[in-house]
Picture 1 (cartoon, rainbow, N blue to C red):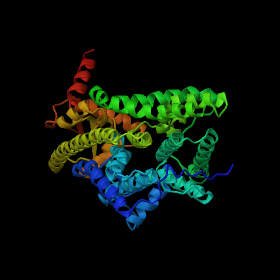
Picture 2 (picture 1 turned 120 degrees about the horizontal axis):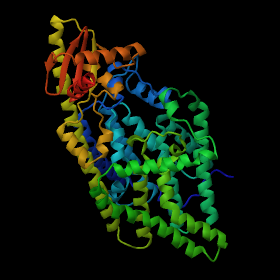
Picture 3 (picture 1 turned 120 degrees about the vertical axis):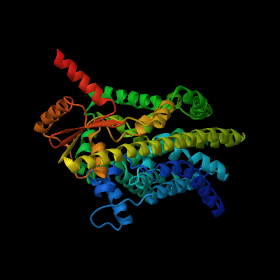
Length: 533
């Protein structure tokens, strides 16, 4: 099979005027700034940022992301450890996404700069992408991964040489961040829908799809041979795949779990507002496919028409599956906002289809603009609420940790303190908790850094405030676990040395036992009740 992909002049417009390119880039950069600014204003170290900002270790190579390591080392003139160079990385991330919007405008012949910008906007503005933009160290590499995943469809010409360049782009995308490949899968379906819209025959549709599928398959095979075999640790454990047909129920369960995660991320009112727009966008490819079948039914076998008709009806479901992509084949996929990069690509592709269809059918672009504006407003609203919640949580945690550090410093004057043992959780600040009630996704995006159930983040957070004390919760031995139980029980036998608003502090031998929130009352009441029994 010739790997080159047929070129449709009616789909690709060629080179756009430079003034249009500049306008699309400027508008998108301004729109993405509305999304990024609340995150920058919050200025909270996010997830792995805690470790990287403090100790400077990369850790990306073991995760199968060698080009992320290379990019960050080049940006930082790397010697022995990384430093925080944000917001340069986050600003670079939205610049890359804005340039992707320029290429989308060129590729799909979107003449209006505002239309082009609003159509491409969801790629980096959709709520799940907020996690990617929140990373001070990872934001740039994740956006580069999305850009490279889309590159074969939005920029490269349809020649054999370009086909191999597309393989290289997809391989590089995987080396930056693996889930970005799902954006490519969405735009492969977009090509098929647009080809149907412009009346391409069934054979050409099949050749186009098989060539793109081969392109993705070759890139993933090269990645697995050169990079995948070196992945180890936590990512290796999470990457275990199904082994055969007997594991197919796992794929269905994963699909349902991903959909349930998306559904639970937004409240009922949010879905009531957005559902009509989403349903409308989902109907366009179905209508295009049915129209294509009806027009071509006399020139092709009946079985071909039946297959194309079924494919048209199932296309929205297939598009949803592409949002999750190869993650559906994992035994225990990591269901987190950052892996749902395909969600933004799906919204952008749906808007491209709507715009192209209305233009083909000689209808007004105002309908597409209205749908795009509604989505953009919802995304900007969520980004602002999330940024405010993020900033409030940072201030809340910093106040508590600062007071705790001061209390420990005062106590160390008269008592030798070697170790620290935490119990309980501070939870969310009042404002963050309120935002999380209205936008449930915030509960997944914002992790409280002072809680006993999250040993890694709590340990790194404490290193900022009490680096001279041993964190007994971090990587404990069996003997340490037994000692923790004993220390917590002994801390309940006498009134706390300090009682603050958000914690109580007790000294047991050379260990400061800190019970966060209502942990002291709950644990010690339970212990007293057990003693009475």
